[in-house]
Length: 279
Image (spheres, one colour):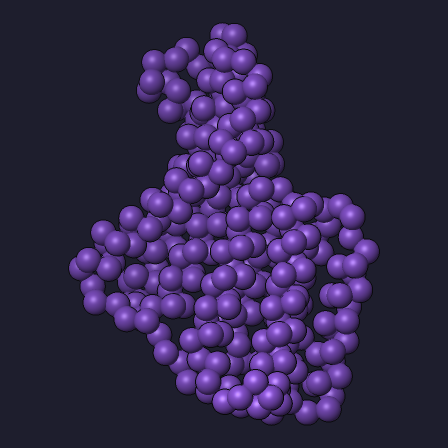
């Protein structure tokens, strides 16, 4: 197919629009959002893009006038709101699924949305905020208790009360940002991506998400235990490095590696899984 013929294909125009929307969202997230959101954003955008790329040749564009208009309005809203952002906004979490919905409407109309339910689910997963989950169930006391237990097993004279972890020379408060929901959501989203990309058994569809939740909680609990140790026995620079700086990314990568190792040891090595090819 020549370059001119490629330009005449509507689906390639949709790919171009989608790439532009993704680039805008990633750029704004990188500039204004917390580090953990940036990593999750990149992973889920990449996963949704991979799922689309695997079956783009089978796409049949069948959108009607109303669906097309609605899709353009949603995309216009995303672009307009994105152009006004100069700080972190919850819109950065909603923008991916709004962009995906607008593109799906342009591609296949309202009736064809079900073809893209996996991609929309993944993009919509990014819109789940830790604040909402904390209102439903606050796991911060559980995180504080687990972190105190880790320190106690390591021989430190530690005491825990609610969301506070006390050591003789310092203490920390496990507030919402350190509750563990961010790590849990990241690994849970990765486990869902794995299930969407590979054919798995119904047992694997149950225990893989459960394993990701447990691993996310444990990795974050270890991070909080380290924070308590640094507050009590180290300096402020070390604490800031592991709390706000690149050190926080190390625990995020550790969680991803542990989940990858779990998938390899308990699924890929023993059960023949194959990439999904949906037509």
